[in-house]
Image (cartoon, rainbow, N blue to C red; front, side):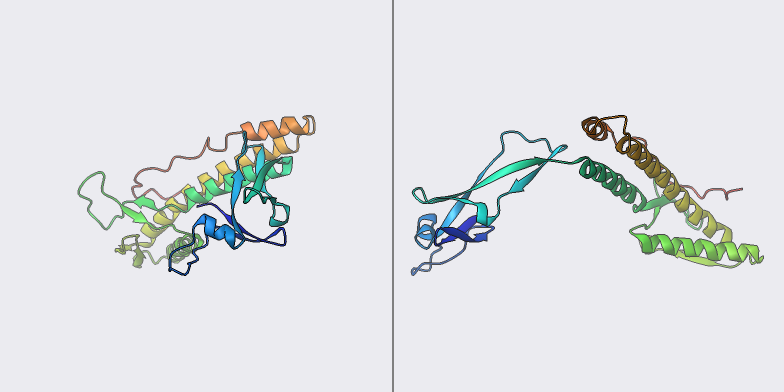
Length: 241
């Protein structure tokens, strides 16, 4: 359903995002013709003939700028477009990099824990990585395991609950290996993110190019390339030397 507007004294005084569900005396919803009798007209959203979302964005007239055709009882909302600035395009690209980075970091990690005998090569558990709280929990477990190893408490039992609420028992070494595996994935993602943002900044600040050339270069830059491929299943890795 389209938008509707209420007219009073020759001006649009209210906009409805959908058709008002008002009833007549027979308890039936008012038709468009009946709505017009109480000053509520449909808004004709005139579409743009061409639009490049990479370089332009859409604007809508405010209710004070809407055009009223009293004869045909229609309100016209002229949609118009404006060019994006260099700053806006640069920010959109950087935001896109940050979004891809977060999407790759906050993704559950397939991991085969040493306390489980998996029946097939495809079977795996998952380390849950939903947000920064999960990351911090994994880091704290890794730090505690490293502390035990440094103090010679190599037989201490550590516990970790996976995505499917299965609790795994591990030695300090096993816990540190798990935390290191998650850390290594995140580090690779961050390196790719830093590289993309450095490349974008070099284009953005390149004063040997005109503003239009920098805009075109930013638009052409593919932020979806050169991200690490997350392994399908991580076996318990060796500790870093």
